[in-house]
Length: 359
Image (cartoon, rainbow, N blue to C red; front, side, top):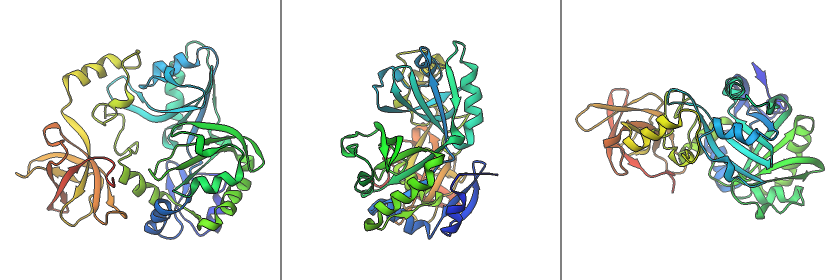
């Protein structure tokens, strides 16, 4: 079991630690609901240093990224980030990721912790033109500072004008006296905020500075439990649950990051799939009947026929009802469609809902 650099700090804060993606990670410090509402209403900090980071440099870096990712990275300007995925050769997804353009010929890829080795090996397979690739995952700490008070907290620590950094853009500069810190207007909560990438040598200093700056806003550390409920309220995919090696970007609702202005892995087949249509789609839903949907629960139609399964489910702290994501047959995927979740043998009514589920 791997540990993030600040593992002992989290233990001393009273975090409940659990295995996640091969790491010992804090799942909660107080309660999932309290931490969830802290992020929705104030500011909280996630230590997500288990995530993977690769640098790609050289004149053919963009060419390699274009060949392995579904989105069009040629559209990126310096200081811009892009959500994308790595399609495999059989119609599924190797991983989803974020591509950061530092400058021409200089990119940062951020991948899921559970897929670091898998993604490295996959991208390396296509590195036929000598792109300088480095896996810096073990050197970087990542803190996601999220919530409506995040910018006010972080602005105390940098001269960079954070309010001027648009969504999915970033700046690199001094942060709490540390140079070359990446400050990225991204996150996995829908509550606003920044993700701070820093060398692990400075991680504890940065963590403590953030908490000192956020003291007036009652800043709190947040665990993976609330991270999951926050992302699910937004309808954000979790790799391994909602998308995986067997789900296509089109089925998974990721057509918007799948650009056919270029060729990439399996692009012809995925384009054909988009034009012909798919038999199943990933949808968000809200429970009408009282009950909590869970991963792998069957989804049925009114006649009791199985039409799909739940990929992620929880009780929404914001809505106080069960919510989830799941794959259903295309004819049952329209917003407003009535579906039924099999919760321990009981068919509980739900409705296909527009994302985000808390909008």
